[in-house]
Image (cartoon, rainbow, N blue to C red; front, side, top):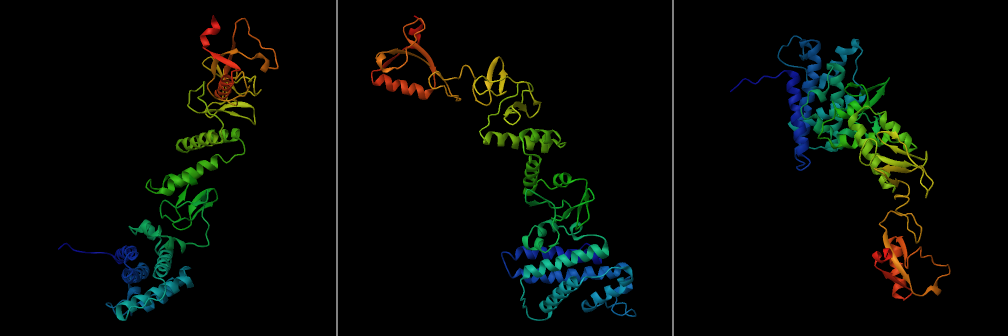
Length: 401
């Protein structure tokens, strides 16, 4: 058998990792809570002994003249207070209370009957929180950097609820941003830098922190979508375009562009392929500034529509198209109802049988039939007149005879 050797700190961390495994198993098998709390209590005691050992190995001994028996769990907290008193480091009353609670539960499990009255998940989370804070204070490290299954345990809602309840971390679109290093949602803006309140890792900006999150985390996509929405959180479409151009990150920029296109299309505002840069769906008409705007090219040259009177006509390879009327202002005008709708027009020829049905004189323009380009609704109405014997629809080619 290979030699098994662990330092005091490594041994404590190993117990904590095993306790997390049991805590996770307890969700399906509540009996595992006993082992989760027992192992966490042992791990906590070993970590506290390491805090004493760091200053001097003699502080581990129950009595300094005895080199075999270590300080008892009941005396550890008082010993730490004594050793670090002149160093300006102290254990908070809440942490003392939490450590004493897990010690009492551990002793009862080993020496007495099991009788856990409080909610096990609350005991576990409070102990983990206090232990993590003491590791950072006295050992200049964090559990997040040493416990292998740390990210898994802090994803538990009960555990997270006990970490820095009075600290409000940075959120985007209502979603808290977790620290990529320790996974706790306590990122704060400190003098222009983003700093984790727990592990003290710093990031140049909040976007850097988001991009450093694991790709497997669903929250990363949610946060990026939310950040893109904040980029577009402007009052006008023109301001949204300028905000997109000011965005340096290409991934975020593409996300913002896609969101803008979707929002424009959802509000029934037609998008079009830009004739200048060729980008699909990048061109639209902005009513507020009365101009065509390309997300890529910004304001582009446009013409005035003779129907809606807006500067909303684009020259699409020689054919005019109005992005406000959503049609060609010339070819797509129904000569019967005069409505501006985006639809196919049918060319029809009409022979009027009962001319007395019409109030206005009919113009034949040099051929025996009336010729018109009409929308589908008007063509249906003409068919109704034909059924009543008022007109007769004749083949379109007859008009040329």
